[in-house]
Length: 180
Image (cartoon, rainbow, N blue to C red; front, side, top):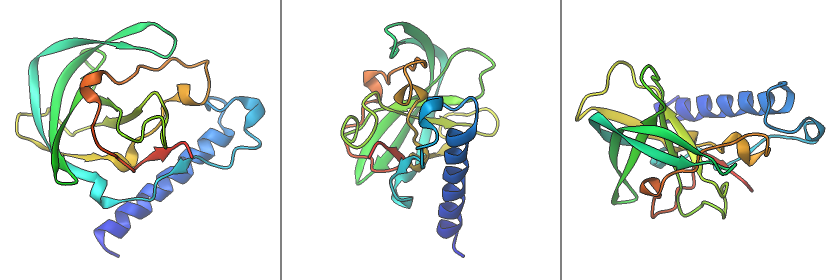
């Protein structure tokens, strides 16, 4: 099996696991009365072209960024890193955020040309967990096949931050979770 086949197989296994969580777990964002009819999330087919190598630029003095949420509040994140990458022959940037010191996960909310069409109208999320501290020039894999809809896409009991305008991609990213 090639690396790509292996990667696609792992991706499909993760998706199956998530579908089971959504269908059965008490903390699922699917309202309890809808879980019996839930037969899995919709996904774009795994596509290695949307698994890109990005170059990190670390922000030593993180800038605060206010993000509006689905319930009308505002939450503050820190912009800690910028990822530069090529997709479909064009160059793009996405910013990564964290809520505060000690948060090792890099939160990458984004919108693209599928937003509100084939994907959730509020945008999608990715989370990156690089090993160790990121340094300027580090190569990081950004895998849009792992892009997911926030819990507020399934239930109004959840409040989710909307991607800030600086993370709106002017291209189509047909990878990850979709709405139909």
